Image (cartoon, rainbow, N blue to C red; front, top):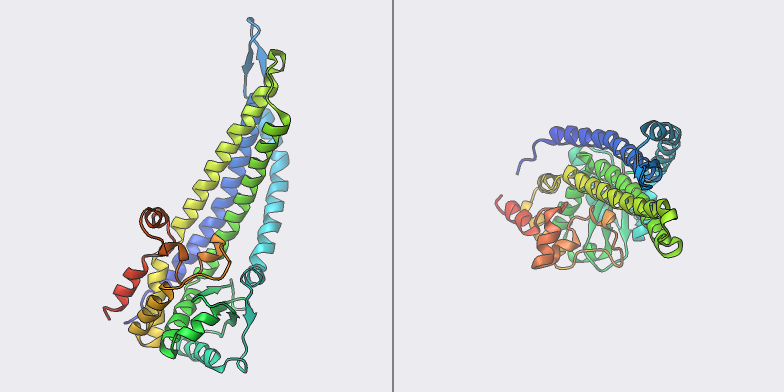
Length: 333
């Protein structure tokens, strides 16, 4: 099977990464402006002739506050993103409990990776291994200094050399296509949004249970402030959910088909990769690691092994195509 379109895939992934980098600050700053506007609306106004409080938005005040807050938000997020972006490899390694693998420790695996890299003319990535009976593999990293292929001991024990070469070739193709860089970028952005959302929800919780709702007509504005916080929380939740969905759409399921094609070409045996996927599908995952951000990098997403309604719901915005379909395509060659 001839693997074609790698330059197009690299260009597409680089473009999507740039769009995410541009879209994220726009969404975040827009969310902050809406936060300030709603808070201002519910806390600003006047009493009419009948004595009722009429809410009114003071846009000048909102814009002034926004210009004061925005630089700090941008600076804080930039620092947060930089730290996460350049330390993601160590974070992932710690989260899954991976250890570096050297040639003398497992020449079989090291030689397979080295031979495949020589075949496609790419630099040798780091190789990590996780002591886990489940079958799993994934690629991570943002540049040649951090690119890493991680495999489990269960995978090494259950797959023969040809099957293992197909899996490793699949992960090397993710690196060649810059899939890992795009995925890491989206994971960091979603993490920032999720953290902001968590803070807002906690604010609502504290307000409801410890601040209370005002029932005194003279303190009506306090009650409205509580309502404002709840509305803001709902809007933030909606924006966060929308952004998560957008990033999932950006991470096309085609990347897995492309990686399968690349892995099949590198190992020279599509049926070996199909056999490996079938074995992995019987016991996918990685120990007690249940983080969705890391699971997106797995060669097979564990949640796709669900059945019935859960399989349908998880498949609506899945980052991986059907394993059965991937195997069917590989077996056509």
